[in-house]
Image (cartoon, rainbow, N blue to C red; front, side, top):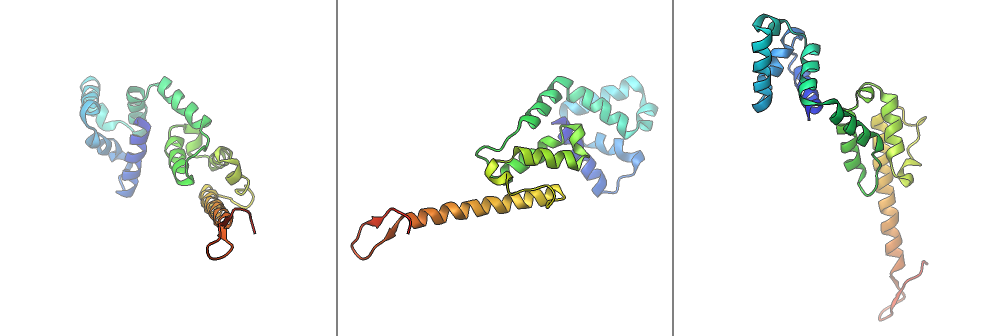
Length: 178
C-alpha cells in the first residue's frame, strides 16, 4: 500500500506540474490518519526548517521505512515474481501485473524486464502468440494477449456451435463435427 500511495502521489504531482521544492509539502497535505501523525512526529523531531528543506527522495525513503517494512516488500516482490495466469482473464492478470510491478523497484523503470516477466506469466495458449520481436513494448504485448484471448473464445464458441447441429425437423442433434 505504501509504494502504491507513493506512485499515486507522484502521478498527481506530475499532473499538477508540482515543482521539485514543493513535492514534500504536496505529499504531506495528502497524508491521513496514522500517516499524518507520523509526519507530525517527524516534523517535531527534525524541526520545521529541516522538513521544509527535505528532498522528495528523502521523504520517500523515510515514508517507505515507516510504512513498507522490508519483509513485507520482499513478500510482495516474491508474489509478483511467482505470479502466473491461471483462470484469470488477460485484463485481470494485467491489472495485477501493473499494480504489483510497482512494488518491485527493479521492474519499475525496466521495460525489458517487465516484458519478459509479463510474457512468462501468461498461459501457454496465449503466450505462444505474444512474441518479443513482433511486440516491442509492454502495451503491444498486452494488446496481443487480449486479441489472442478473444480468438480463443471464438474458437471455443464455434466448436460448441458445431457440436450441436440438427439433421432436419424432428431429428436429434448430431454431436459430431461436420
